[in-house]
Length: 467
Image (cartoon, rainbow, N blue to C red; front, side, top):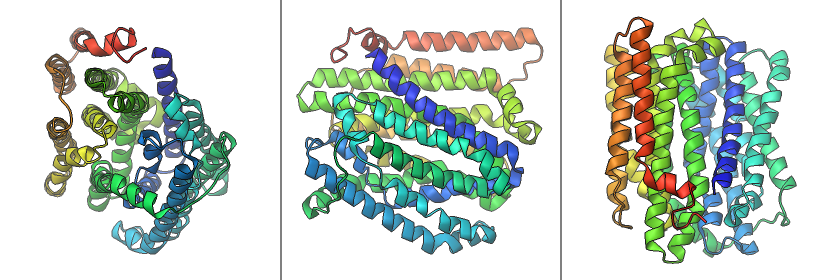
């Protein structure tokens, strides 16, 4: 089990590291304001993904019919239809979006960006079906090799364009590489079908996920939209880079937890192994909590030299914001665990409920930014929303399963997070005081891990379902 977990983690980490490396290279090569424009591409793609999200690739993992070739062909056909609709929506909305962000010159780029959702929809679903039998490499290789291709393309693109168009074509090339690799690694012939009954079932499955996608988009991009609209492209560049630096490792952990635990949670639920299912959920949320603790600790210890070393003085304004950004990203990663458990029993609305508190605070974030200009306040409002979302997700999860006791893990996680934030804000001058603060933080993360018995026992093969 540990070997499989390491494979998934390393695969997700490799893809995310390559994407992050691509963004860093682009940020170093183009002006800060141009990177702000480039950051809007991710915001725009998020709108399209949000508007057409049905999690069809998750259905082939979760559904009892996931190995049926006809079911797969229908999901692939529906995915292509979804991608085509998304592309047409982006072409139509490109002008209004560019005008809203006060960068009308970017409208043609947004229309070219419409190629991305269509190309992505052409991926072969075999790479997701393989997860049902514990074969994760094709999915991981598809993401990793496409990200590598996009990274290698940055320098030639820079020679051709020299501005934010580098990011545009890197997005398009990555989508194309992803399609190519997924088909090379597939086993079944690629077929498309449109079975109305399966499509209706997919809509029922994906309907709550679509609503959740709207909220997830606002969770990830709402603050960026506010910052770009209120503070301009240079401020957006700083804010977007802070999000990328901390959210990238959080998403690596969250995706690894989902990829590793969802098939096992779904299988134990299908077999009626209620107690094993509860222990697996506890191990999964403890993994998310521990990952969040490590993210906070790593940001505290290495955030400043990382920013200065990778990005230079142009991004020095980001340094005081790193720990707040890490707190937000850690909280989001933890919130995904209850949604994974809920999805394993066919409940797809958990993530939607968990996103509501975060989204509800966005108007307050807008008012705070317009009145004070403080990024700190905006980010901590986001943290508050995520913590409230974790609580609401757990309350909703109780409706579909009995929750295991997790008070020790929650308390040690909260203690570690509060301590890291306090060390960040306290005026600790001189190495003795700073070293003492860092040692306290490290000790609390160790205590946090020690409190997570189910996580440790699972990877020690002493927990039911770990064999």
